[in-house]
Amino acid sequence: MIFVIIGYDSPDGQAKRKVCRQAHLERMDSLNKAGKVVLAGPLTDGAGSLIVIKADSLEEAKAFASGDPYVTQGVFARYEVHPFLQVYPKA
Image 1 (cartoon, rainbow, N blue to C red):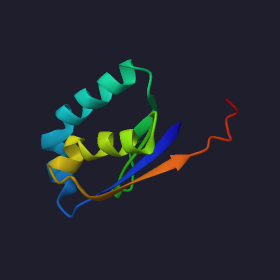
Image 2: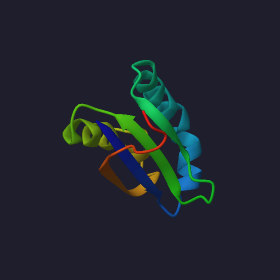
Image 3: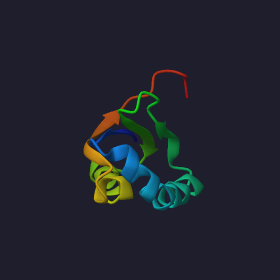
Image 4: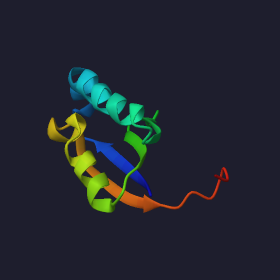
């Protein structure tokens, strides 16, 4: 299953992002090595980040999101996790 995680930066998210970035990337790297990252990156307007992952359940995707350093260290003011159906590109 595919899930979309949208993190919305807190007012001081850009400053906190610099401090937490390495820990966030290390966590993402391990998920990527497991073949579970579809795509991920910051929104270029500074609003936050988009992460698209593969997980076995919504609970697993939510657990991943809630443990991310950007969540635990306050980079994101809030985040959402949604199940996603890929239509394009055709898999």
